[in-house]
Structure formats: C-alpha cells, structure tokens
Image (cartoon, rainbow, N blue to C red):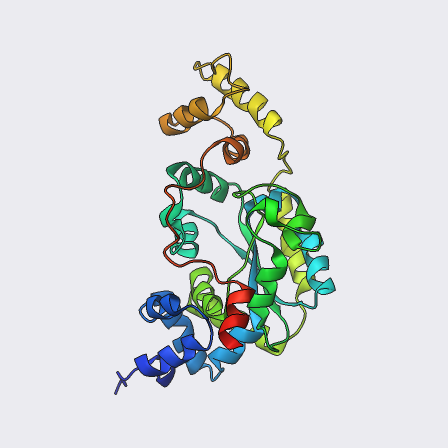
Length: 312
C-alpha cells in the first residue's frame, strides 16, 4: 500500500520552521511554502536521511553562466574559492534555456525590462553553464550567505577588490558571469531547478561526502571551452560586427549607429534579423534598459547584513 502522508519535513508546520531557520526574509518563507522546487528538495533530503537545514547551511551553489564560459573564468573562480575557504564538492554541466533563466530569477524578474529578458535568452543560447557545489563552514553565517557576500554585488560600481566579480572583470549588470543563491533557503530551491530527481540525488550524495571535485570542474570547463569560442566583451567590437551583419542582411544600420545604437539594435532584435547573438548581448547590455519601473523585486535580495540583524 502506498503511504500518501507527506514526509515529516514537508508538513506545513515543520516546513515553516525549517524555512524560518534558513532565511531572514518572512516574505520568502511564505512564498517558498508552496514552491514546487523547494518542496522537491526538502522531501528528497528527508527520504535520503539528510538534515535539510544542515545541508543547506553548509553548502552553496555557484553557477558559471555562459558569459563566464566565454570569458574563460573557471580557473580564476576555482582559485578564488580555495583562497576564500570554500571547497568544490561537486561540478556539473547545466544546459541553459529560457525556462531555467525564468525559474532561477522568478522572484526578481518582475522588474526586468523586455530588453533584458530578450538579451538573457540570447545569452542562454551561447553555451551551457558550469555549476559548482561548494562547501564551507557553518558558523554564525552559513556558507551561502558568506559566498554571496564575497562574490560581490550585481552593480559593478559597488564591487570591491577581493570580490569574485571584481576579480573576474568589471563588466555590467547583465554580464556578471556568476550567480549564487542568496541564502540557505535558496540553495534548496535551486537544487531542484538545476537537477531532476535522480541526478539531484547523485549531486547531493557527492557533496555530502566532502570529496574535492575541483579537477572534475576543470575537465568540464575544458569541454565547454572546446565548443564555445572566447569572445570580446568590448562594445565597440560588437558595434562593428552588428553593422556588418545588418549590411549583409540588406538592412543597413543608420549612420549614427555607433553613437546611438539602442533603437536600431532593438528593432533588429524584435524583427529577428540575423545578427551575431554574442555581439547583440554585449552591446545591448551596455545600451539597453535593464529594468522597468521603480518598484522592488517580488522578493528583495537577502544580504549578509539581513542575516546578521535577524539572528543577532
């Protein structure tokens, strides 16, 4: 007979207690109580006999996005992780598509502009991504909180020497190379976004052993590099390439395209003209609006200060 009762870890009262211990944001607790991805990870960890709270506090995820593959950023990231007290305990190639992008940033993309969404889809098609599972100490501040703080903010103007994003290169809001979950609750959610059940069990099992998988990450990176060309992040290079593409397509760019490319680039993207996707992403990330309105994200980012204030 099938037992239709929910696992203990997934019962509403217990799940509320679990999530409250994993995020300082009450709105996130409410949203995640009915989030399918969170429920899948919590229930699976319970079946595996692994404490979900402990796992999510001691582990985090670091996604090297397609722009990081183009930038050849894996080795510098591995070195930075080791230098900052994080151990790579898992590495997987992750296919990227529009659905993954929307799932990861579901609670933030209410403020994303149509232009940003369009560019993100182009970026997703550039390459698969590399996901690192990392472990760290769970002292006063859990590993995912520490990693996100040390990674540095999305806004390039706020990055400081020592931040991972600062070290990898001062690009922009869209081309920020890496993504990490804000807090332990996000670790649970993102595990189920990246992996189906059987693969997720394997990833969790490998991470739980604590064995290093840095060399696996290097091997996967080499395979991604072999099929993904290294490209320029210079918008001037992108302008020249897009101008040539438009000329070849019989829809020449306007004479002032280099000085004022936003309108013409948007028209070309909406019309579906055959222009180099990478060049469109690079140029668009510099000249097109990245957000709409002035309101907040559905769920605001969680910072280390939020965690310390809530737990202090």
